[in-house]
Amino acid sequence: MQWTRYWRAADRPVEAMHAHFTSHRYHRHSHDAYSFGVTEEGAQSFRCRGGAHTSPAGTVVAFNPDEVHDGYPATEDGFTYRIIHIGPELVADLLPRAPLFRDPVRHAPALADALRDLHTALREGTALARDEQLVRTVHAMAAHVMPPRPRSGPDGDPGPARDLLEAHWTEDVPVEALTGVTGLSRFALYRAFRSRYGLSPSDHQRQRRLREARALLSAGVPPAGVAAATGFADQAHLTRWFRRCYGITPAVYARAARA
Image (cartoon, rainbow, N blue to C red):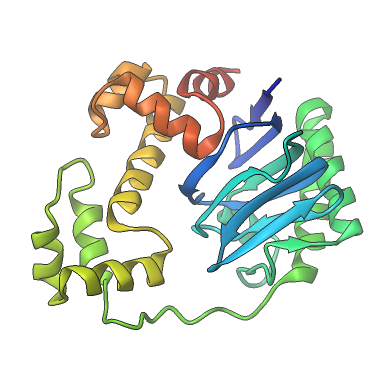
């Protein structure tokens, strides 16, 4: 049986989830936060940074902000894991420069312990205990960083296409508009966009819509209204993609915001 337990802070960009999945498969997506967790039982697999990875029990999974990945059970029994998302602005308050994780899967016992303690403090501890564990965890993760990666693509600059999608994120932007602002062919655009941002143009636009949906849900807008405001066909369409990318429904996310 699959289950999820989700928590989020009311006063700072921190979220936590404890879940067991046997059949759920995450669609390719990213978070606007540092995402890292511990696989407790079983094993989970995912694709990230152009390669396939597996996280068995006891290992740490780590994603940088906007780092695209998917996720699925590596065995029939599925996997249980705890994952925490921490906003980059909070990390910037604690470290001299924005870190990047070297590897998406690591055997890092000290970081794994810090993550477990932070997860417990977020759900059960006082505000002071939460802050203390956040500081401990961020400093533990700083031992596993790498230099910044180059962002140039092999086929040209897809930046203008991304800017166009950002400016018209609720609209059905035709590919001709994207090729027109970049001067690239359709296939060169797809290759360059995927190489630079890790997502296809349509997935990137959907990701933007989902992030806007999260903000509106946090503000108390009902899911049906959120779907209409963010370019989804209806509430069911929003719910389907929300769960595929975040593992929970919009209603669960909204309840956590109210709590």
